[in-house]
Image 1: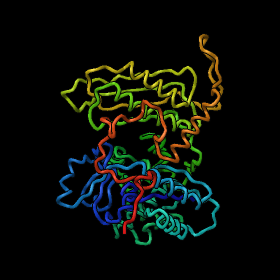
Image 2: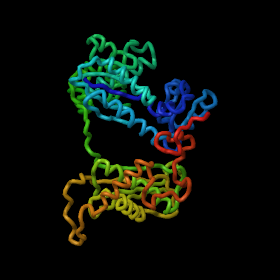
Image 3: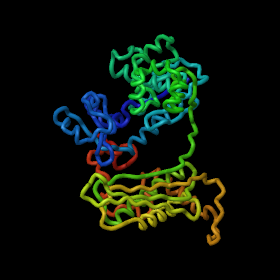
Image 4: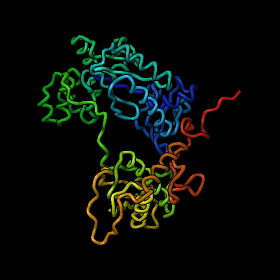
Length: 437
């Protein structure tokens, strides 16, 4: 038996933990540069705010309906997610973190009343982190995900589903007829694996509810759509096709990119941001105990600014030896950037990607005839990176880094617009919440 644990409206809920005045009010969280709504409270959803809707389209609701908009605070959300995931992991032998706000738990062999366990899990997470969650149990991962959807909707919209399914829904305790009735009440678009483009095609074929999809022929739909659809139907029918992956495979590519708050024209500013991106991907590479054999850099103007000259150059630079050393990766990224930079353009975005990754324990490739022989990790290099990572973890991200990534001004010209960002309460000493008498 699997469980899918999901934080309700994760980003908004994190903000409400530290700003209780936001409870019960319509709130949205905006993307980088405050461009679009990437998270919505239930109250904002009821106002008709859609996911990824541009902020300028709903800004009028600030005055007319009291809508509150906040800039994304990913540092806070990531830390709150880590706390929640660590707590939830103690309820089952195996855990797969699926996203920042969701994880699967494998309850196979656990002799316990699942609904009671689900409610206790919710109580502990709410008490220790302040985050509201919903829990869905099912004999397959797809059914657990669907049970979680039912738990959310039964809590948010009373009358949609039986009230006993609210917050914690256990498909394993239902009679077949009861489960079929819940599936009949649920639109096929709610199924994990059915995307926005797939749902209309299924509906055109007469498959409008989850029950319709469950009763369809898996092999036929697999031929018409994909292998994933074949597995989805089998999982709805109770045949396990997906297991909990508690040791996910290492990423084959690692990328960091961002649009700028305002156009950047000067090379020093681009060097600063590309150096910062290279530092980020280097850290993520070390976290998965890997090394990279090449680095890819791109810069681009905005296609939405029709009056600007357009340019989107890229460069991929092979590395002499596989490495995860921040200094070497930043140096390579800057060389690649210098090779593609052209003056006179208003650049709106940049990115750095590490490619051709391998484990840091794998034997290095044969050296070129003219390469200088050297150890894979010269003395002190690995220790230096570990020390830098430890300092940044203790004192905050970017406390120690390469000089070219350091900001030359209190707020760099290329920084994203985050005019509405809340403090990073849990990760920055100077932003810790204080109580005043």
